[in-house]
Image 1 (cartoon, rainbow, N blue to C red):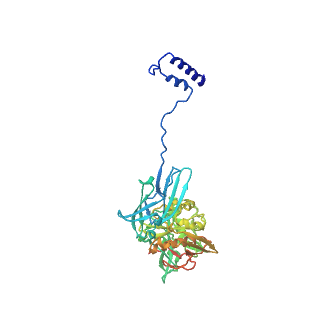
Image 2: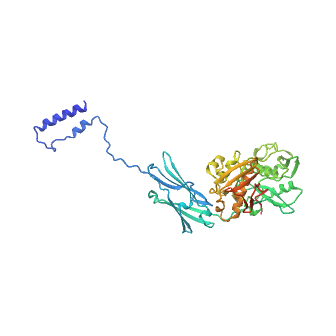
Image 3: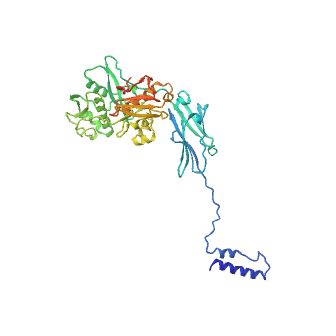
Length: 457
């Protein structure tokens, strides 16, 4: 039965009834009319509709509570209210020992503001420079409170700890040798057995350089180094040089401990090969055990039936803080690395770190990133075997007057770039200008990395 017919019929019935009966709404219940009219309709939901609750968030891009030697940091302001006009104006309060010592307006330390609106988030990324020189403060421990002028974030704040380290106790490098002395390069491990660190040890000049290197390698690093206090490889009782191949002989009882685990075996072999091939006339090492070719029976099954050469992959040199706070350059080999990516990698920029798969190294609390992110690479050009890099002229603001920090940065740049076979030396410019005295470095012409790295003192 259609609604129209029912409605007409009801009107006739009501009109007819009213003609005889005085109208009294207490006597007549008209609810049946609504039931008849709506008998084929869906039930009506009279629940009130809630207004959408928007989320407003305010946080650091890198979720780190304490920043060591920070320079550039990025703050993110965002909401899922796509129509809301975000206010990107921030205030920065700097405290030391819970006492407010300075307030910075955003314009004074601002690097850039990026609007990033996608289908889900309305977002602003605000990057600021809080390097030691830019804030004009001395090394020490500080706290920073970041506040927003936006009414939606009035009850929110970001609180971070800032640790501006004093000057690094950097081991340093050199080309100079005292008369009657010579350097040998030895590879030792850090306390956690994560890295092999090249260390240059000064010894008396000797015509038995191979034996001196073997003995010093087995002796291990000195106590003040903060590196592991024992050899990570066995002692060789005999060595013989055939052309550019060094034959090293071991007793099986001495190599037995290095067959238990793959890491121990790899560290032992790598430390020996790298130490011995640092001698200019040695290219590779052949291992013998009990006067026989080592094959793959020892050192946890490593295949050693042929002479072993050190890897020639390019390297990135990061700072590594030892247990005694001495800082060394730690060479990290990267199989596929373009020299155009080196500078960003030494700044620990996330896209390059992911590309090189070394996030575990960057996240190590003992790793020191050698180049602050506030320094810009303005230009890079390879001409023959000379690489020219042009850096922004704010370099001297990042570490104040801490000479060793700058020396580590320059050494890191030189060692990293010259680890490529295509690059022999590097010309470093600052906003197109040369420097003949940059914290002890003459950069007025192209330079090579120093011959002796991580000096043992």
